[in-house]
Image (tube, rainbow, N blue to C red):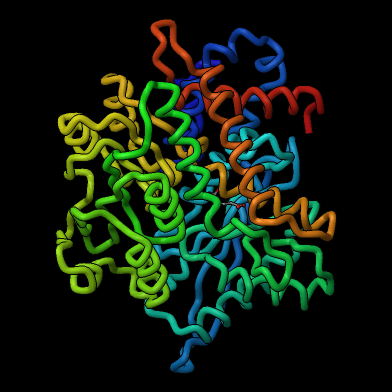
Length: 445
Ligand code: 2IT
């Protein structure tokens, strides 16, 4: 494989799909060396096959808003790769959603899911529907309209969607209700379900908790500990909430949160009440973090700014792709950051990652750090298949063990001759090898 040649070809076929091309280039560059040491990969054209999704469904979602006006959105499901298990990955509802973003997310999901050790393929879906300011009734009608089309393409052994940005417990409930009605079955086709209809304990917390378990291992392996460290978090959604909750519980001080409107700096650090407030803030559906300042005196809101200018030991991007760029990375390094762990998918730009690797900052890529979310979705699928429920402790212990195993795998594949652990390389190689070998063994399909 020649990465530049392959990328030129892909850019020609998919012009303008910048997030997708960015994600593909990173993975191919990481695996190029080991790929070329394994002639069976080239013989089976694994690179050319793995970068194209198996199929993409795109469909119209018409619905009626509270004023009686007809609205039209686009819905998608990108079924990327099911070599190691049923397609699996979240649904994103956000105004920015397009095919490039869902293809990047679906592509990343292949390797993330492989790292979890569970049998899950990669997929992603969603819509350009913007939940901001929508009423509960509008959210329900949209979810129902979306599922009226999607239900034909998914199934408990075919493709199992879940949540992502803009899709939480409420949306999963409305989606599941419509699926169950249309398919006339109760097989747990979505994950992230409520506890009354087949959900798993710990799933809401899992992405954030898993990320902090992974972070603990990163720090420990490098002679550090989380206790007493200052941490900047971006975002204020489900992922930021889970990460802030676990980091605080383990004795770290979380000093920032952010939204599309700017960031808040809270020198005293978050506590249980402030973390609970995040749920309230999210439920208000306004997608702004600024009300935090008024609610908690002593904190300060910085309009239009990103939290990466604050001096911290650890930075945790928890919002969205490319939210931390080269300039932000420089500031963090100047301020002495020791670890940056992406809890969002592809939270750092390639320029930012280069800076971290160059300065030997511990950098954890999203596909390893945030894999606890989908791993716990996998545990939800297992419980649904067995038709029983595990306790909180059982699920948490399994999540913890999976995160340890992912960390161990990254160390195994990513340790450089000087001892520095390149987690990006480790995660990409380990995830890729598993799926690529599985594709070789199953022939050209
Ligand atoms: O990015 C992700 O891994 C998710 N949004 C969760 C996917 C899942 O199927 O639980």
